[in-house]
Amino acid sequence: MSAILNKIGTVFIPVRDIEEAKNWYCEIFGLKAEGEILFEHLFIIPTTTGTGIVLDSKIYSEENIFKTPLFHFDTNNIQAAYEFLKRKNVEITTEIEHNHYFNFKDPYGNHLMVCKC
Image (cartoon, rainbow, N blue to C red; front, side):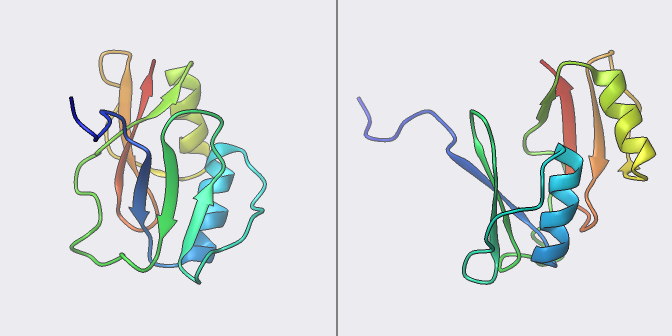
């Protein structure tokens, strides 16, 4: 038995500009860009369940951006998610693969994924 749980608590995403990132991610998730920026470099994105998401400008550097998706954001409708991000002029880096997932980049170059679950 281990004292470490096999569960991911929070994912930290490196961002260059915390205020800009807060606004961009909240818009992508359909949230109001409300909430406090902690310690001048952290913003906790409100999530309903599961793993937390924290934007962090203190850890940002070209070397730290995600070169490949490390996790995925869930969707119930992959086509609608794809079209939504296209309308927002988000850089989409793959087509919808196997009618199941696609990849895109945030404004800081992080490679991210949306997956139908």
